[in-house]
Length: 260
Image (cartoon, rainbow, N blue to C red; front, side, top):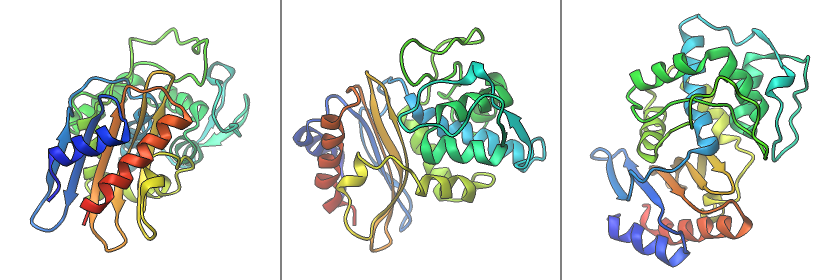
């Protein structure tokens, strides 16, 4: 049986410094959690893109937005990306295209364009109404220093580990509007250097990562080769680096024998 003590030991042996971890077993007799400092406040970085996608999809599901709408990309939303963005100023992007780029590629330009489209207050209100009480979208994302000029910023974005776990649980249990669209994008995640590297053949991990010079995170829905399903969320206050990624992978390798 997976326990908090197992998480603590696996995290310690992998060298994850003061992480916030939630591992939730789905199915069977119901869901059960093992946790480690799950409420530790950490900046979410690109993990905020998943709740933003939920807000966009809710507006599409209710007919307020159309996935076929063309949204102009503006110079004000341009910033660096780990993978070169296909978006350039003046391009008229389809809403569905922006959504997919934001999740599957973690594109910051697509994210900032969607923040303008949806609005920070409206997105935050939609998300908190769904029970993600600690989640708020307050500023645009920057791929490097200096930070993007964002005169409408009202503070830092928040999406704590327990909200991330709740969102992935809602997605896995088909509680979100147009959930398959989001799940499909998460399954095609381009960044698979963290927890994914510790999985076994046949495992599938629909997930999102988040990285800055101060934090490194990974979380999503794991379906093991034998069909067991888990929500796994790991936030750390460790800088993004190859060494940190290796520690995430080692943590999963040590955790994986307990996910049966």
